[in-house]
Image (cartoon, rainbow, N blue to C red; front, top):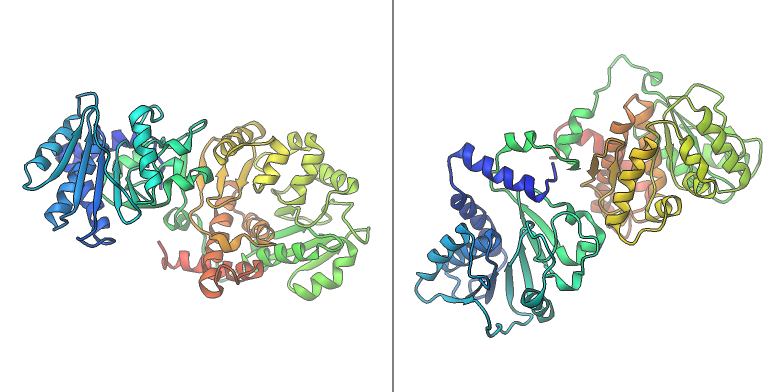
Length: 508
């Protein structure tokens, strides 16, 4: 699913009207019907609903919603239209005309001073003040209206985006001056701002409403941002040949574990084995041999010459993928071994966890990474390498720049894990849950990505497949175990079934 900016969304609206032979008012009515249905499904007709409309098309949506709710028997609908400039958009003015002729309508058109409505926590506010086309922060009276809504404790439903929030980038914006929604209803497609942690308190729950926008135009319009869905993942998968053997699915070498951290090696190995790698070898401190071979008998073990940590990362056999990092520590010998590996590696690399912390200790390694190396940092690891960031938006911007500069793929882990490619494209993951915030979850992901690389998938595809199925397996585990009860090994156990469900068309 593409994520468009405000200009592209306007183009999509125009194309929909032209292709379907409708005008913009009819499209607005369609959107208002979808919003009204959502409100009706959640609240009884006795509910007091206060509609706050602005002078643009977002306000037109809100006025149409107010009318439709009244037509459906909602008697306690109060409408405030802010027209302080004395100029409404054409569609907003048309919806205003339709609304004011309704008998008994409680309608106030605000031109200058007005008496603000009393609001409390029992009320519902429909926020249609400004949508994603907003070009400057709220100020003056509009800022006061937003603050009053927030202070009321009312349940807030924002149309398109919460008023005051820009649809894409909000660096430097003051979020206390924005409307804070409990529910944001966006038409057809998400907005980029929804994927940043610092906007969560403003956006609240968000839901997409299908208003049948032109799908040919959606495919035609370019976008650097995508939300991964099963329909994006399914075409990438290759069915297995019944006459194949284990070596047809590649060999993955995992450099993982050290004294006291062998669990990380075990989880990465399980992730790789459960994701279809034909052969998995764990290279680790020699003390880990009995632990790994007992816990993961399907994996081979290659002992390092040192007992407690890794000092040599030289591959001794041919492998189709090499993953480095889970639990290896950051001793100087280990850092040097990593540097030697990246200089000579002839297989695709995945670097995670302590491999990234080793790079943070010796930043010159970053410039040595082979093209299309996949790194999988969480926010802290990313900041240790690339510098401190004040927001997830700033961190993503820096990840895009770093992916281009170093010609690598950055899997920036989080609620909506973002995969940034060297081309500048970014894919947000739609799977996963808060239960995955548990020790070892990232180690499993490292193994999963390595397994797809070993099977011959290109790094740009292996990163998408690994992240998506890791999250989907986490969702399966959460349904069975609960978010509090699931552990990392539960995720590894379910990756294969997640792949099967997508290949069989059981999801999406």
